[in-house]
Structure formats: structure tokens, C-alpha cells
Image: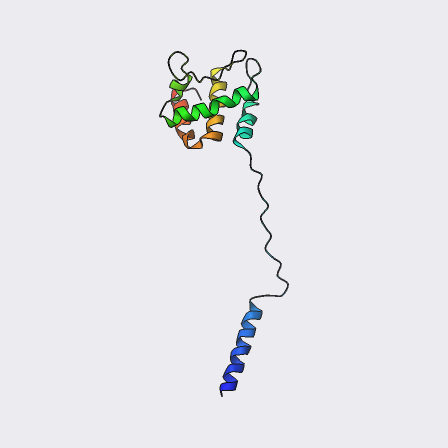
Length: 133
């Protein structure tokens, strides 16, 4: 009886093991790594689509997002950041180039989305409420 029980157990285990594998299973395909776009590339791609009055260098454009994020982290508004006479003086402009307000707002949104996306909703809300976006 004991021998029969052991034999039945072995057969049962063998059949269960066989059911779990068809023998021609292929290993699961590894997901292909997605191309990660850097913050700088994401921001500059958007910046290159904006028409400037003059030609800012990428280096000049890259100064702004980190400063905007610092100001937003400190609780400042877009209006304060873009105020050139007592506010943050962070309006995107250089010695030999400038932006129209609508383009400055688009650049700001691109910078915030790339560098500090946690502030995107507040920035968009402020710009929309002011009618500037």
C-alpha cells in the first residue's frame, strides 16, 4: 500500500510539473529601455521652437529654469518672477535678445515642466487666470 501511495504521489507530481510547462516556452522578452530625455534637452527642444528677438545661446537659456524653480520653491508667483523693477527680475531676456510676453510664458512653462514639474499646475493656473496663457 505504501509503495502504491508513493508511486501515485510521484506520478501526480510529474503530471503537475508537465502541465506547468509546455516544453517550448520562450523566456519573457525583456522590455526595451526607453530613451530618457534629459531636462536640458526637453527644455531646449521647446525653447528652440520659440521665436526670440535676437539669438540667445543655449547656455543663456539654461540659466532661467533653475532660477524659476528656486523662486517657485520659495512661494513666489510668475508675476513676481517676471517683474523687472523690484521683483525677481527673471524675465527671459539678455543683453542682445528678448522675448514677447507670450513667448516668455511658453518658455517658463517648458522650463517648469522639465525642471520642477511639481509647480506646473500652479504656474499654468496663474497664467490662465491672468489671461496670459
